[in-house]
Length: 154
Length: 159
Image (cartoon, rainbow over all chains, first blue to last red):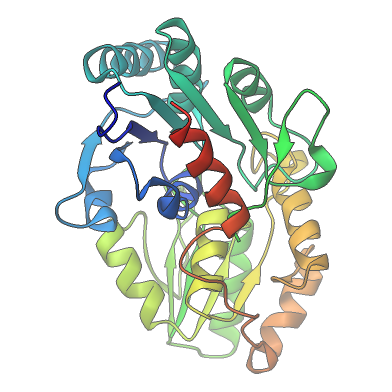
């Protein structure tokens, strides 16, 4: 990259608590060119005018077809946007972002949800292993080779 | 106004039933619930299956008290806006979610003094009788801990 270009960041999550946690990370993006990506058009109000915002379809384990559609949309998004970094707080769309990000040589950050307080979720473990930076929000869940504890969204 | 919410993923009939019964017995007309898609809607309280984010925010910010499943979106919003909140975690063993993470999260956050929790039906009924005593917990700031946002910012800057 050239010296003056801001890093291009995609901040992506599904809805509900994952989205609220992602929004709380905003001060981390002040020096970046960030695009928020989530699953409900109504969330645009949360990022305000001027911020870049895109919507992808959500999915969970209960529908393989929808999972495949979400996976494709995340892949396409990363392929066309070519961000320097993709960061996610979960869930399924974030998992795909970690997998495809790694494939495409994009640096990835997985911030495991604070809702996983006693053990990492299965998808969190899988996603985290693909991430360049793997974080948990609970000190007792940190491990020597990740996830690392660097504070929480509170 | 009391705002009850179960989130968007699945209904939570046990919570809604207990609040509905309490509200009926005490002739409360100031309860509104977001209940999800359920075959057994409440008979007394006002409700909606889902709320658009804008209406959710309106209901949330005008409420005096929040009663909710242990969803992090709701908990974080209550802490952010200094609302008293009563948490009733879903139990996976009762088919209310896939794993017991709501119980785990509620236990941890409760021991950190962040939320009021009713872990079972009887406690919820008791706490409903003394809602006036519920105080908001210490409010949190507009964003995550500086340690977390700085770590991420540093990582992004390395590219």
